[in-house]
Image (cartoon, rainbow, N blue to C red; front, side, top):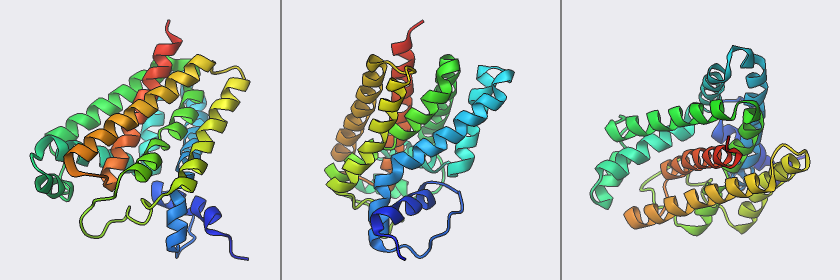
Length: 255
């Protein structure tokens, strides 16, 4: 029995976002269109794997555990989002007009803006996870899930403007149903964490607000520079939203 596209989208999302070999080819256009609705779910699974590894290596200290789980995340995703961040930083930092931005986005080399952005984001994620320490396993699940939600809403709000063929184009055709289903996963994760007493209402609100603010700032910047989205911009949004949510949680926890 063939599964409907809304369910096959989960497998397509795993194939799109990670290096985990789940098969399922060939995927229909409808499957790819529903993939975005499962991005946060895939993120939660990735975060859960990282959380388990954190608990296994935590004896070496919080900084070691943070470094190991961030490296694991890069391995599982093939640095997919980080690549988008680097390309975006290079393009928006070095491109002075729309045509030049697209030209830089197509360049596979990493420039100074991209390298700097990668260093800042990786150091910040490691530092924040180490700062959260005992709360880091929960933070991993929540932020990996939550940070993959803003890109879905940006797909809904802005046109996809990549020139020529793109791997992300079929996935970026998200509509309201995909955005609503995609938002269900972080809502459930945050509600479960709050019910379990591991995240307060204020902490959950801080994380949601930070992720939303990151999405708004990114969306406004992308629209101003090129009039819409590219696949790289979506990856950059995930990275910025993840850092924003981690920072918000760390600040909300205070001392």
